[in-house]
Image (cartoon, helix red, strand yellow):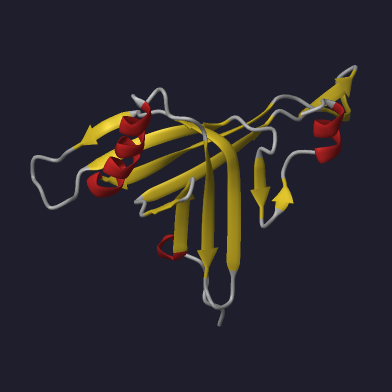
Length: 151
């Protein structure tokens, strides 16, 4: 039986720092849309391509991000980061790369009065680089189209 990848097997690098995450998401919105001729499906057109996600961290790892922000002056002044997710077991591997991610903070604090859980902080990000996203080294975006744009 294969050893499948679980969340415990995923390591996330934010820039050059390995961070421990509680949750990591990467979502792609591909604006491809079906078109019709007089109500009958007749091909498709390309649309806007976008990617974003969220990273949920405990305070120890959140403070690493805040320390980087302190070095440049503020959270808003943070540059973009490449976010690499690598899940690996003996039988399987999956590597995602999201390029030029701009961070913000959506959930500064999530605290339960009952205790028993670490504090959580949620950092959403948006992919801003034309390299966009790669899955196991395969680009999601059409590289020929990117080249025609001169990006």
